[in-house]
Image (cartoon, rainbow, N blue to C red; front, top):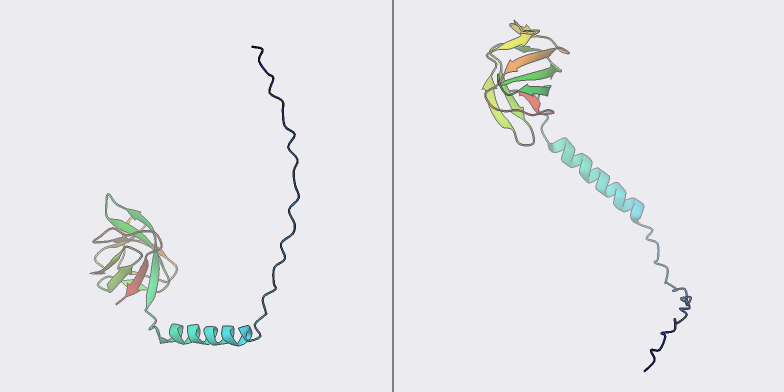
Length: 130
């Protein structure tokens, strides 16, 4: 028997009718609602006690267990500090501080110091004076 050739069917794209959707009524009280929410947020922020943040960790050297800290307030040997971050939370006394590998007794606001730490710290961890 002879083979029949399969003819190609022409595909015609059909246009879909546009869907009509009902408009939602606009709420008039949205401004009042947002004002209430912002007041609520302001009250909760004011209720939190402010901790005395004196610096931020900028780098950590794991082999010597030392952190580089950018100070926002003065710090001295013997001060008790708390280092708090996303995964870090411990308290220690300041035992050793250095600037450019030279031991110092006290550091001023704005200086970057090397601080010997008891545990691993990460960038952006906050240093709080206890």
